[in-house]
Image (cartoon, rainbow, N blue to C red):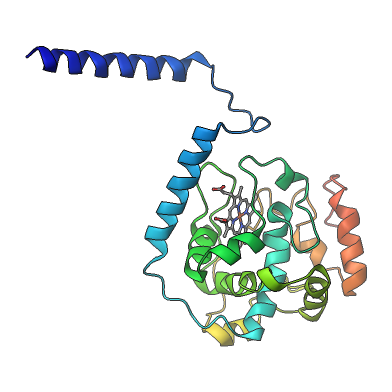
Amino acid sequence: MKIITMFISVVVIAVIVVTGFVYSGLYDVGASSPHSGFANWVMSTTMHASVDRRAKDIDVPNLDDEALQLAGINDFDSMCAACHGAPGQDPEAMGQGLNPPAPDLKESAAHSTAAELFWVTKHGIKMTGMPAWGSSHDDEALWPVVAFMTLLPKLSADAYQAMLASAEGSGHHTTDGDSHSHSDVASESIGHAEGDQPHHDQPGDGEVTEHSHSTDSHEHDESAGNKEKQQLKHDHSGDDHDH
Ligand code: HEC
């Protein structure tokens, strides 16, 4: 009986201490200070175990398909590089302020299966800034970017730029003005049905940043387009609709 009373007292005290800490405001929620080693361990272990378990039953299509990979690089460039960076490119301002930081996907691709990359891309990760792209894209629109990610471990900065240039018009984030159509190549490769739901690819999509797809649609020449993009990266005027 004594043991039960003691056990209940310990539990009650623990609940009071934890609740007190939560309400005290002592914990620094600012993204500007790093997570403690313990919080890091809890988050990253929980994340990896959760993704491992959930990615197990995913059927991976053939990703060794150049058309799919070319479609994926455009999607990667417009949907992912701002936070994760790309070969030879640091993350943009938004990505630099994330905590936990968005990892270099070159490393992630070297250590993850395609199914795991797909699961994270589709479902995102709670409380980290990694969006669930599946809420705006169907599976067929996400496999190209996964196919592309599998190439990252071997892709130099120059090869990335060259591939990006040759991918013009591929993917559903095209540089040729039809910014949200799913390209025929990608569709044929994985049997994607046209006319799926509208996409909203970035937080605040199309309002303030260079990722507005209306901006992309004015890039006639790839290198000029890239330059234009670089300039727009620092232009937060929000006036990107009337070029
Ligand atoms: C708004 C910022 C942001 C954007 C945009 C973004 N991510 Fe992420 N992503 C993150 C963050 C932050 C993490 C780290 C989460 C963590 O530490 O648990 C992450 C993690 C990941 C991971 C897991 C990496 C690993 O090593 O376990 C994958 C895979 C991933 N992102 C893929 C993508 C893809 C593909 C896109 C584009 C379609 C994308 N992300 C766009 C912020 C972003």
